[in-house]
Length: 109
Image 1 (cartoon, rainbow, N blue to C red):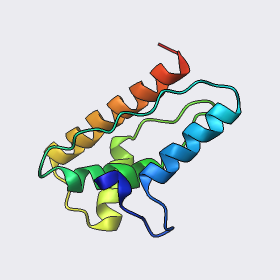
Image 2 (image 1 turned 45 degrees about the vertical axis):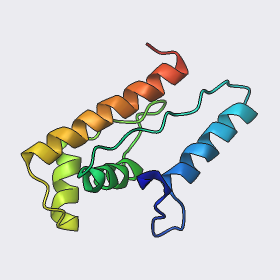
Image 3 (image 1 turned 180 degrees about the vertical axis):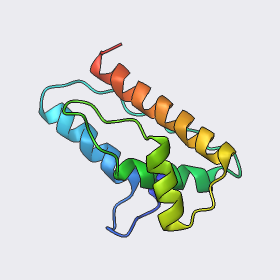
Image 4 (image 1 turned 90 degrees about the horizontal axis):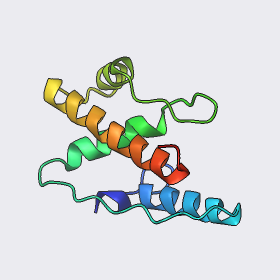
């Protein structure tokens, strides 16, 4: 699964998610495990781009900032990723779902 792919630091997204869950539990917060998403066949490339972008995102103090069109455009140019309009829309939808999940976990509906 894509969550198990190691990046250049030697860690996978699964490693990072599990570490965050463990830290939250140590701080007395109950966390339900992040459901493992089903990646439709052929979308693994976009999933990888999403996580690369997500690792570089900023935060607004207490919350992660959504990925902007500028963030994606800069990434696309620098990495020569070849992202088109459909890809950008898909990445933004993944980001909305991811941030929504995090917000739900914090109880900030």
